[in-house]
Image (cartoon, rainbow, N blue to C red; front, side):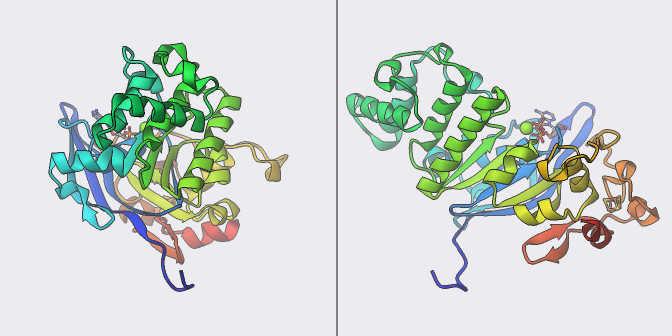
Length: 333
Ligand SMILES: Nc1ncnc2c1ncn2[C@@H]1O[C@H](COP(=O)(O)OP(=O)(O)OP(=O)(O)O)[C@@H](O)[C@H]1O
Ligand code: SF4
Ligand SMILES: [Mg+2]
């Protein structure tokens, strides 16, 4: 690849809108999200609970709970093809083979009455027409690849017979089985102990490099992100409020919300500074504040913030912030 050639864009989400129509009103869960992921790249999606991280991923994967959820606008281009305009059959083929997802809770995602070997093997039988015997042999290889000890024996075990960390490895194996181009991992380690979290995260990052896959890593743990992500999208109330290469964002956030998130995690390089918590709660998505959705919680808010919604301003190449005062936020470091 020459210097001015761009890497291949795998996923190009453009102005995605999702709403939930419930008895309490219409919740605008995703209000115009755009992001791209290149081959071999990791995008971390970060934000408080309820900010729309999972719903965005579900809309991309085509597994949105509908009704009550509806995609009301936008495009999801995967290798140039709009997934939102594909038939269900075509979409199912893309899912698994080219695009796979890892969920937080392996126990509820795996079938409790099938052995893990049968579940892994089924991927190869269904998608690649392998014989049961060959499929089972591939299942053992995959289990070894995600470092499950005694894989040849454990292939006959059921999900509940594995520890949380091992189950999450099986989820990773399922996602990897058909060597997809892109994996979306939604809080893949949240349910695990801290030490196990790190091991599973390291494994995922290693496999991603080896297979040169794109990875979307959804998390609310900024600590995890620094080591594994290339770029970050920070979500608030269903929108991206800041996007940046990971090191730029850590060095100096360009949005007060990101700044609040960063200040709320312990950091070795900021020893001695007091930990900070963002005051207040995220808005009700059926009634998002006018102007900047963050204004009721923002220490920097002024009159314009209550009336004019900030668009995503370009801060630098590959960097954007939805804050009227991004420059002074950035200058503060
Ligand atoms: N099944 C549903 N029915 C109604 N509303 C829903 C449903 N699923 C999600 N929502 C709405 O979408 C919003 C975003 O949810 P989402 O699951 O994407 O949050 P999240 O950022 O993934 O949070 P978390 O960190 O807790 O996983 C929720 O706050 C809720 O208002
Ligand atoms: S636009 Fe105003 S309220 Fe919103 S983040 Fe920036 S300073 Fe805060
Ligand atoms: Mg979620």
